[in-house]
Length: 168
Image 1 (cartoon, one colour):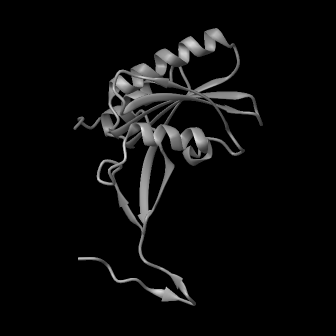
Image 2 (cartoon, one colour):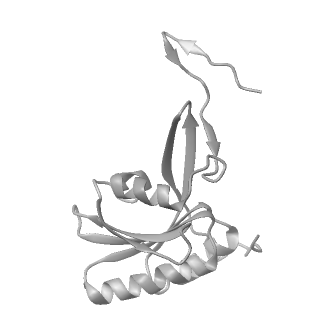
């Protein structure tokens, strides 16, 4: 059953609907194109990030993007996959981070981005902080009418005293 539309001063206030990309019939290649067009949707910098390139993976639902923040010179290695993050995704991100910082010795950060970050991935990322600056990002898709927006929302890393929760 559809929710009723509400109007205030001629502006629709119909509630946004947060759904998975798969439920919206959108997939990795669509998401990669949106990030290339507008890397600011990831919300990983304070300024206007610049897209450098996409690194394809064997699965079209997995890819990495390299983003540059001209304000402070930091490069971000963002490993993206639709659905839930997993520790393989974190491993791919760390591997690419190592290769990129060797290739271009400037400040680099690792970002693991997925629609959901399970607790076991968050704990693995917290452990990886000992060697690499790691951030976690949940990607949320919202649909209003025919318009779909995607934005990133930071996920805090667990502390050393937080209990380790099992994965999915």
